[in-house]
Length: 361
Ligand code: IPM
Ligand code: MG
Image (cartoon, rainbow, N blue to C red; front, side, top):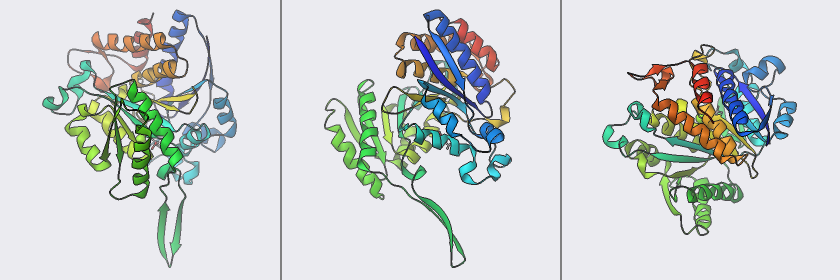
């Protein structure tokens, strides 16, 4: 099969971790008889430095013409990087929001899994973590506060900023359907998270979610307020299967969920539209403080590449092989510095990529 992949190395550790994901994908292609064509595009600070904008229309066109996009990370240190002296619409993150909207990537899947081998890194008390957890946050990605009307004005000498949180029922319905579909393939439970005790947009979210649930009698739906959900994630994460939520709540809860695993460097994500097309990226950021040191953990990006094989190309065997290689390497005791523990062998970013590639096939 021919795989036409657009890569966005991006900023910070992005180029290092994407290089390792390509190393692993190349090995998959070799072992399973596929051909991969990569086309790199610039986004974020890397694009600002060359083009003065965080994402060009040409780059979007290139991505649109691919079967899938593999991304590293974008952005820099918000207090020291010159990128953050630019107007908001010219900063690195604006490129990410632009590509999500342009490619209609409304469904963001963020799995948070407690790996047995890394249980020691979990910051929760053992009596909680021993139950294990394997949850998935289904975050709406192209609506809500991120894309509502915003402005900053001065009224009678007083500065005022406005952000708008809008959802229509169609936007809610399509993400709810994605959430229920994936729950059906998992533990058949959807926890829809909202702030329906205060917000109208949440009350509509709840109503539409209940309508969608009627088509999924085999899936249990429960509602949870977002503040309670933040507590429950540290109190009893094993209760969750699929957490279905809007853009901003999903942003915050997915960071919390990934931290609770103790291994944010291991967590993949996929952003999907209504077709097989998707953008795949690690759940972590660009970590500018460790960029260029060859110490970043490439596993989250490599697992994102596995999600890409599974969701965009239907290559389940190949995706299984990548995931099995990750488990194997962890079992053999190899660790990058972020997940290092006593008795294990510390390896660099590129060594981790090579170890994984060697174990495929
Ligand atoms: C994420 C990030 C982005 C977001 C930023 C970089 C705009 O935090 O993917 O979670 O808030 O969506
Ligand atoms: Mg975030």
